[in-house]
Amino acid sequence: MSQKKKKDAKSNKYRSEVSEKESIVEIKSPAKISINLVQANEIRHYGIFSFIASMFLSAAVGFWTASFNIEGAVLKWVAGVFSVFSLGFWILAVVLWKKAFCESVKKFSRVSSFE
Image (cartoon, rainbow, N blue to C red; front, side):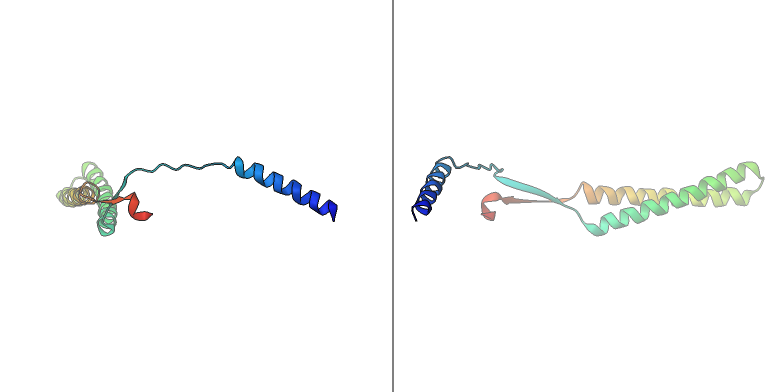
């Protein structure tokens, strides 16, 4: 029994030393957090229109190249139509990009509301 008391005394002494030297963790956070929210549909439509614009532009370049190598008014008209459509889709993509990322909704919240 005396050995058990010695072990308990040692463990109590160790516990008191540890409790006196406890670490203090201090976390500092800002007073408020801001989060930018964007519309998911506008981002999806931006991706679709930019993809379509790149496809139409590739077709337009192919038809312009063919029209310079082969004589024919039809190829120039088709190249022009593809060019106009690719320009239109590119403009739509830029408008949607600005709408999605430049006009995002900003939400603010106080950190104290999370405590």
